[in-house]
Image 1: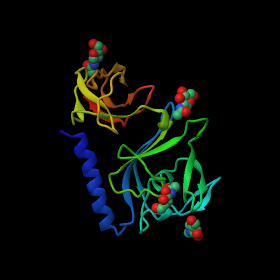
Image 2 (image 1 turned 90 degrees about the horizontal axis):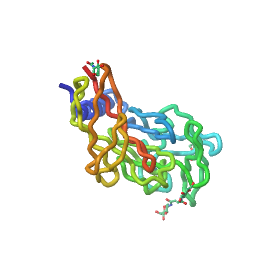
Image 3 (image 1 turned 45 degrees about the horizontal axis):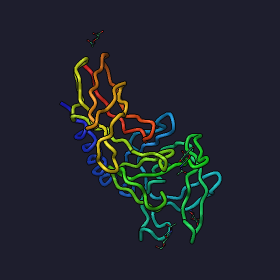
Length: 230
Ligand SMILES: *[C@@H]1O[C@H](CO)[C@@H](O)[C@H](O)[C@H]1NC(C)=O
Ligand SMILES: *[C@@H]1O[C@H](CO)[C@@H](O)[C@H](O)[C@H]1NC(C)=O
Ligand SMILES: *[C@@H]1O[C@H](CO)[C@@H](O)[C@H](O)[C@H]1NC(C)=O
Ligand SMILES: *[C@@H]1O[C@H](CO)[C@@H](O)[C@H](O)[C@H]1NC(C)=O
C-alpha cells in the first residue's frame, strides 16, 4: 500500500539524486503552495535555482539569497520558487540599504490592499526576511499566503499515511496549526468540522482520486491530501 509521506519523501530523495546525477546541482525541488482568498492558485513541486527575478513594477534584480548579504553564496530562494512556477506576480523592489528585496504585492491578480497582503512561510514558519533573502532546499515547503498577517492559524492537514482508501469508510484526519503544531477546532474538511483535538472524520462516496483540504475563515487554507478511493 502506498503511503502519503513515503511518496513525497521518495520523490524528494529521487529528485536530489537525479539533479546530482544530471549535473544540475544548482536546482532544487521544492513544494510550492500559493493560497489566495477563495482558492489555491498553486500546489505542487517546482524546480528552482538562484537567479535574477524581473517584475513589472520592480524591474530586474538579484534574488539568490545574497540579497542584503543574508547568505554568502548564491542559491535558490522562496521567491525564485514563485518565479519558476510560471504564476503571474508583481512586486516593488526596495534597494539596499533598505531591504534589497522584492515586496510581493500581487499574485495571480490578488493585490495587497488595505492591511491585507501576501506573506511567506517556509516549512510552516514565518519568514524573518524577504523572499529573495531566504534560500531553500529540496523538499522544503514554500507557502505564499494572502492576508497571512490577519489570520490566526496556518492550517496543516495530516492523515493516516494511507493513499488507497475504501469508499464509504470513514477516515480520521487531523487539522493543526502548522506553526505551533496545536490542534485547530472548527475547520471544514470535506463538509465535516474538526473537533477540539483537531480530528475530523471524512468519507468518500465516490471512487476515484479525491483531494481534501482544511478551511476556516480565520485561517490560511491547508495543504491538500490526496486519496485513491476504491
Ligand atoms: C541581476 O540583477 C543585478 C541587480 O540586482 C544586476 O546588477 C545584474 O546585471 C542582473 N543580472 C542579469 C543577468 O540580469
Ligand atoms: C539587512 O541586514 C542588516 C545587517 O545584517 C540588518 O540589520 C537589517 O535588518 C537587514 N534589513 C532587512 C530589511 O532585512
Ligand atoms: C485589518 O482590517 C480588518 C478589517 O478589514 C480588521 O478587522 C483588522 O483588525 C485589521 N488588522 C490590523 C492588523 O490592522
Ligand atoms: C456509498 O454510499 C452511498 C449511499 O449509501 C451509495 O449511493 C454509493 O454508491 C456508495 N459508494 C460506493 C462506491 O459503493
